[in-house]
Amino acid sequence: MEEQKQAKQRILSGIQPTGVFTLGNYMGAIVNWEQMQEDYDCAYFIADLHSLTVRQEPAELRKHTIEAFALLLACGIDPEKSLVFVQSHVHTHAEMGWVLCCSALMGELGRMTQFKDKSAKHADNINAGLFTYPVLMAGDILLYQADYVPVGQDQRQHLEFTRDLAERFNHFYGNVFKIPDGYYPKAGAKVMSLQDPTSKMSKSDPNPNSFISILDDRPVILNKFKRAVTDSEAEIVYREGKDGINNLITIYSVMTGKSIPEVEKEFEGQGYGTFKMAVGESVADRLQPIRDEFNRLVGEKKYLEELMAVGADRAYRISRRTLEKAKKKVGLLLP
Ligand code: TYM
Image 1 (cartoon, rainbow, N blue to C red):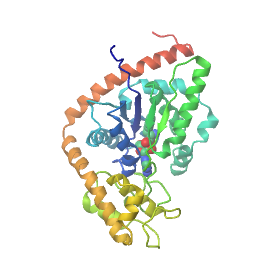
Image 2: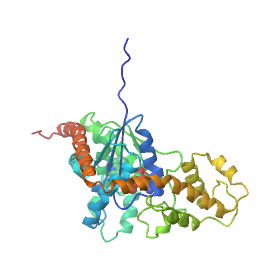
Image 3: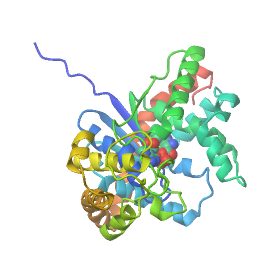
Image 4: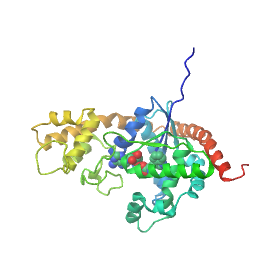
């Protein structure tokens, strides 16, 4: 008897195009995105609508969007295997966001730590989009009936919110959305700043020594690791209270595929200086081919635009089905 072919589970995730991706974005999300392409039906997108929640220089945002798209491909996201698109090219996202906004509660949105953090950081521009940001994100995910959403630790609360919102909507209007699960890497779900290892590595950090951009070249990478903040002991072990060293061990472990005990053993009795250089080298080795591929791709604007158009078209056809179902359920008359 012929074996029945099982449909693959769906993966969806997005990344904002505000600046070059960091090593945190890479380890927390993109490494998983690349690996999951083999076994899942994957959709990845540049979340440019989300970036509007913070004031942007329009020409820069356009430039960063195309660069972010090229960077995703350079990181190994293969448009032959995965659906890749730009969020604002697919209008179902904004539309789904509105329908879902009417089921989201002010109280739960006000509890989001990202909203609180960003409101504090941009006190002169606490716009409504910043507040409803998680609803737009929920729409991104639910439109594609995603099973798993590979993200870093900082998105966990938004994922929980998405699940709550989907359950509430399904409860009131009937079954429309699949309830998605977050998918977090075992190591690297929260890569820390090299200058303050108690806070997350972030591309919006004003101190460029605190983060590695995945387009930094080898001397810059080595220099940033050389300056990385550690502690006053001289022991390369993963232990509570050693935030700086724990972060470096994690980075080295992900870059080389070695386990944490293996890393501890390799550097037993060695100084922090030697260790930091080894971590820097491992990162530089890993990022070198990405930088080369990015430099090649970014000159191919026409090719990138063609891929974006194909991606947008496919994304629209998939997401439209869920949007129409949701609109019908809430009582909107379909044209
Ligand atoms: P964004 O653009 O801030 O980050 C993209 C991904 O990188 C992860 N990340 C990290 N992981 C580990 N350590 C770090 N220091 C670190 N910094 C960032 C993030 O967790 C994320 O997975 N709201 C999202 C974009 C988005 C989205 C979506 C994601 C919009 N719609 C739907 C998933 C599904 C964001 O701003 O990610």
